[in-house]
Length: 244
Image 1: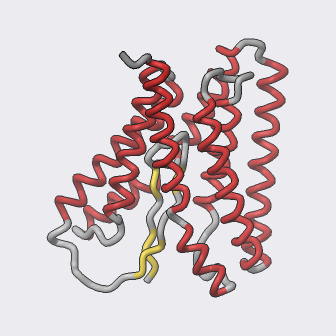
Image 2 (image 1 turned 180 degrees about the vertical axis):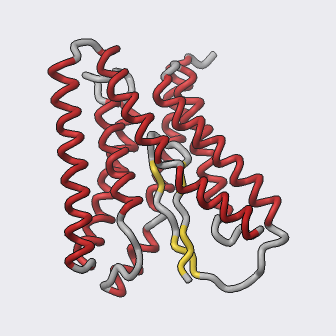
């Protein structure tokens, strides 16, 4: 009989692998920016939002805040590095106005996370209090990022076309949410459960919409910008945009 902790570790490792794939999904976009040496109309907002989520989840998973959550730290630490690389490429090849705006947002995020870290470490003296404060912040900011998939789903229903919503990303997003929800339920963690259960739910809705509207989708050539993913510990948020 496998122990709950061993099962949780196995599920968490699988979640790490899936989330890693989602973190890499925008790579073709940045390879294009690198080759063109121009960000064109691409925006840094999703990557800045994902960076913030990764920073908060890394802090949540460290032993002084929430013990026994090393797999939360590993995947979000990897995500933090990947998003930093994406933003570095964006900063290098964006014009002055876009660069200044992105830098300003990044500075605000860093100051915010620093304030959270200092406030929690100095002001909360138990794991329960620290987990609650940081966990609530993770849930709030993570859940806010589900606005993008909702927008895409609305577009699919309106246009009766799934060209804006790649099947593979919807499927992986769903599996990712399910995996991390299972991880959180084995040793119950409310703050990991909420955003990832939402991710699994929205991923399922995307799959249903895909199969419902697949036949009515016009078959034509299109250039799809692969999305960034909010990786709130492997939740299912996917931001998809299509370049015309």
